[in-house]
Structure formats: C-alpha cells, structure tokens
Image 1 (spheres, helix red, strand yellow):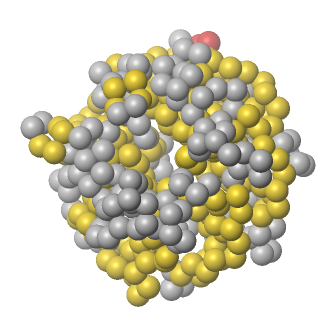
Image 2 (image 1 turned 180 degrees about the vertical axis):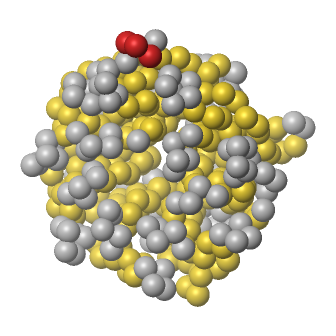
Image 3 (image 1 turned 30 degrees about the vertical axis):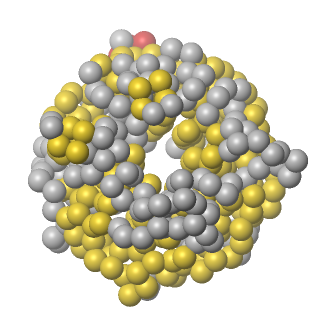
Length: 369
C-alpha cells in the first residue's frame, strides 16, 4: 500500500460510533485511516482498526508517533465509566497498533487532548462532569491516572444543565493553562497545568461565566495566542475572548450567532476551528446542518460574518482543516458521509471537491501533521 500513497500525503484518522448511544445508532467498526493528497484533496482508504468501541474523539501525540482515543461508554470492565485507548502509529503506512487502555474515571468520555510536551493526556468525562489526567510513558502507553478534577454546579436548562457536563479541555499556547468548557454549568473552568506532577490546580480566577443556557462545548485559540473562541451548543453562539497569557485570563470581546436569522428549527452546535493563518473561523451546526463562516480581525479578534455552507449531510458533529489550510473535511454523523471542501484563501468560503461514504457514523477527524 505504501508505494501507492501520493508523495507528501497526509494520514487522516476518523473516529466513529460503533454501538447505539441514546438516539445515535452507531454503525462504525472502529478507527478508519485514510490518506489525503494535499494538492487535490482526494481521500484514499488505507485501513481500519476494528474492535475499538466508540472511539468518538481522537488526539495525536505532538511527536506524531501515537494516537489516543476515548471509548465513550457509561460502563467499562464492570465499573461506571468509559475508557481511553493508546495506539502507536506506523509512520510508513499510517496503521495503528494497540498499546494499552485505561479506565477513564468517569462516564461518557467525549474529548481527549495532550499538552504540548506530550507528557500528559487529558480526558473529559461528559456525564460525570470531571477531567482525568494520565501520564504518557516513554513507549506511548498510558500510565495510571495522576489527577481527577470534579466539577460541581448546574445552570438554567432543567433538561441539559441539571449537573456539570465537562465537554472539552483546551490548553493555551504557552502550555501553562487548561480551560475546560462545561456545558452543564455554563462556565469555562480555568486550571494551571502542573507538568511535574500531572495535576490541574485552580487558576487565580477559577472560572469564567458564560450566559445562562449557552452550553459551552469546544474552544480554539487563535494562532497569534491573543484570542480564543468558544462555541456554545445550546444557544447557537460563538464568543470571542481576548487572552492574557501571563495570568491566563479571558475577556469577552464579542458574541455572534451561528445560525441564519430566519432559522427556527432545532439546532445543537458542535465543533469550532480556525484556519492556520487565523484569517477565518468555522463552526458546525447540527440541525441546520451547516458550517457558519466568519472572518477574523487579527488586531481585535472580532468576527465578521461571511456566510453559511450546508454540509450535504446530517449532524456535522466534527470537522477538521488540513495543516496547509487548503481543505476542510466535515464528518456528517447521521448520514455517514464525509464532505471535502476547498477553502478560498481570500474569502474563506467553501467549494465542494469530494465526498466519501465508506465511514459509518463518523464523529471525529484528525490529521497527522
């Protein structure tokens, strides 16, 4: 297979739902591996790693040698909670080899990330409202949990915010602070990242409030490190913040909608990403089934509306931008298709260039840079 790979191609990893989860009828078989031609955006299937249960979110080690996947479950090995799995990456074929698995110390782990040094993996356990930290061993395996931070509180939506729901961890560009978007509490929790002991300590300002009923979900920092952006699942908004990296503080700059003004149907926002240039920001709408597009002012961080692009499928849970900022891939979970768009470098608008339909219930996309 390696001789058929385009020169300088990117490996792309797709996480899936493999079993029924509430209203989601997972039909995936594990983690799917593709390569992408950076010139055409064409995706070619390489292999799939079967038997990985509900790898709904993935993260790749900074050195490119390892991949980590949550196993989004409510019970694992007789305990209430899910797991997180470690794999080594074959640099020639992109294939994965299972290394080990750890109990996630909470139910429905939905997000995983690594600090910039690659020493620690951080897992967000959605239904338990906590974050667990795991050291990474020299061979990429996950060590025993080094810290668990439990959230406490709720917000105004009696169905969705009756308790904490830790949705994601985002580490700042200095690798000193970790911010946890908690959908249930309408807060961004702020922690100092202790890289010596593998622990999370409360920052001097322990949390940032978000408007009641917003449902914070995912964050992403601007490449210049001066701004960060939060997408809110429940009220379909994006908040721009100015960031002071010294004290690790956030100051709200602007709140913008993710939906057209005339849309009145159901919607739940999911993912948010910036182009590597920092010129454009995208957010996904599940229900309206679209990506909202904003241009970014590099000096103020403010957002200006560009438009919407329909995702040509149902429930765009996750999307990813290739390392050059040329192509954007969208995973439509409930229609089991992945759409490739080319990004206009001047306007940020999207043009469809391809589609694959061989990945059932895709929910996460990660490029190996």
